[in-house]
Length: 130
Figure (tube, rainbow, N blue to C red):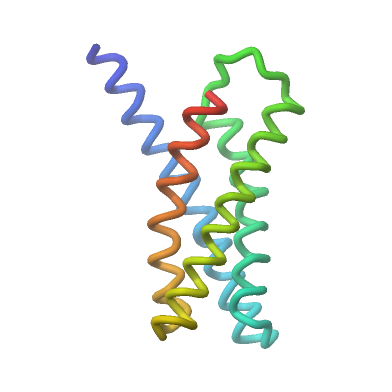
């Protein structure tokens, strides 16, 4: 039992490390696209989220999740993409509601969005890809 808990804790730590790297890609990409390029915050958020998901796929596959199921790599990638598209939908809805409806600064909205979508990403990937 202790070994299972330790393994889970280590997996969560690796997930958060990978998430930190991808968060940097996501947030810096969002700020760059919005502030430097003048892209609409929703478009910029979608692009930066997508870039971070691609990096996250490779990091997650190599250091976070151990594939115990019999799913082949192509099917795993397709499932990962579908789960990421749901995450992208959550990203866009949360960003829009927090920024356009509630009136928060888009960076504050991003912080809220990241907290919610990170839970979705971990739980959905753990259940379906491990």
